[in-house]
Length: 145
Figure: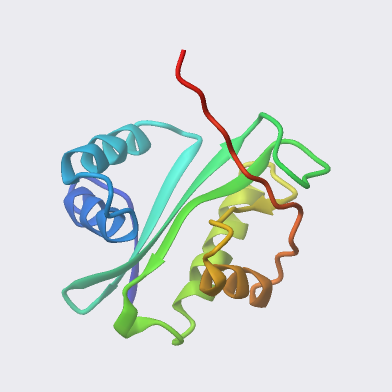
């Protein structure tokens, strides 16, 4: 397995992986997001490739605004992390977290943060296994004006 940094040569594969994680989106929306990531110094994506198949990604950002539970700023933030089902429980998620912590340190961050849906028990348990602690639980609201 190899690790690749987001590039023009793997951007479509990354958009496809993102679509698998966020199926309510569209390929074009994810591709547009990838182009923005590619051109932003405070965003990065790493992909894992097994032979000829892209199987995982992590998208990280540097957040300068308030991050729930953080006691420092800036904070490295996991915007998305995905491993294809057949490659789960092989240490790939941990490898992604390690990439994220190293990138965060290089960006001057002292903490790595993430979030997940309240009902995503698998993700919550993964985060706990990786050494994260739960900072808070929130319910978000919106209202049309």
